[in-house]
Length: 138
Image 1 (cartoon, rainbow, N blue to C red):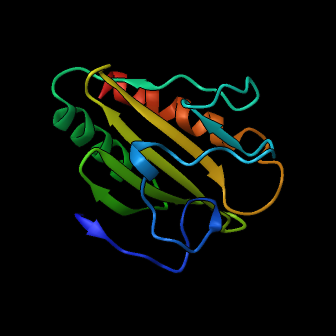
Image 2 (cartoon, rainbow, N blue to C red):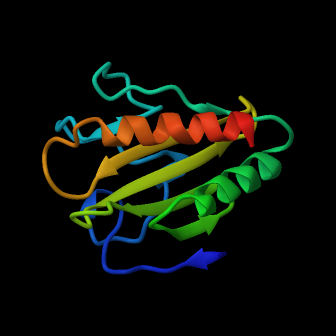
């Protein structure tokens, strides 16, 4: 899917168009329901996802991995940026996940955050680690 589809929300539930401001991911809030490879806070810090090949190839592989996961919707896929909504199976909670390809470093930066609530029981961290594993074996 290319282009942007907005459903009245964006990263952090702001209702604004998703997209990295000045080539950066949204910062994590103070709550423990967010992880980001751009965060310096150890509570939120997670490693970026490494890839091989060109940036376009790394992003295409990421898109294939995302599309293989249940209850996902790609909301924005523009240039090096990818914005995805993940919905939980039982309570239908939505999490916003942003990816930003850094071709110079051969990594994909990531931010994964719950749209509502305070604590996510580690769901966002586990999701990013699962995507990292799938990228390594895909």
